[in-house]
Image (cartoon, rainbow, N blue to C red; front, side, top):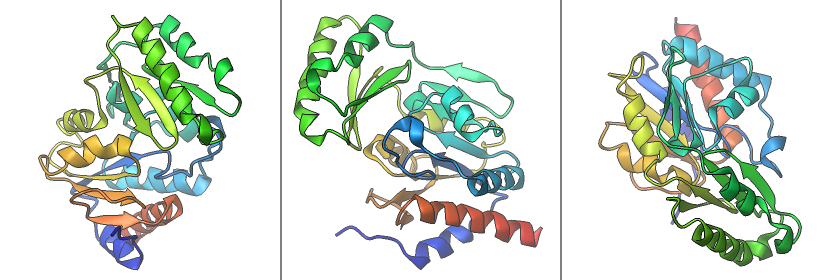
Amino acid sequence: MQTIANDPVMDVFAKLDLRTVALLLDVDGTIIDIAPSPTEVQVSDALLQSLRHLFDLTGGAVALVSGRPINDLDRLFAPLRLPAIGGHGAEMRLSDNQIFYWARPLPQELRQRLADTASLGSGIIVEDKNYSLALHYRNAPTQAERIRRHIATCRTAFADEPTELLLGKALFEVKRPGIDKGESIRKLMAYPPFSGRTPVFIGDDITDESVFEVLPDIGGKGFSVSRHFPGLTGIFKNPSQVRSALQTLAANRRARS
């Protein structure tokens, strides 16, 4: 049976030593709430302040880990420009603004065909991430199977383009194969200021499974939001509790410095 966190997970998180850990944070559904569409999410001033303080207290070892492209993360979290893994691992930015690209964008023609959902009914939200394209059906849950068939037809029409289907919370996403958040985190941890630190990751969805799978190999700790994964250190109830934990961690360490 799934265990939902309460005060104990807050206590464990508050005891993290910011001199020795690297904080790796999934975005949607983890540190910000899921919205009706990806463009409607809100990043509060309080969260920005917590992230800024944690970035300073860790010597820069705070990174956003997201399916969103890095330029989208910069727009959401402006004026912060944190180290980041974007596109489910397709791109990575270090603290010195050096950016690595691990995959080619999907062809525009394929993305256009995937985005043509006129025959599938209303309520489907298209999110073009360049390296991938996501079709969100939380507002049209009865269309899931039709969307799956639509995606299969599009991938068959572009059979020479290597792609894979990624499942998420009420979404199907077509992306390049061979890239994932877990392997990109493994690469990130080789660079300062992350190298030599204990990676601490918080995620919420099956798109984060690859991270939880690599954490034992790199000596990391995993926390999730309302979902069980093997080997977790703790489970938060919701993004609001994660934001409170980040705020508490930042405040505790500032008080002791």
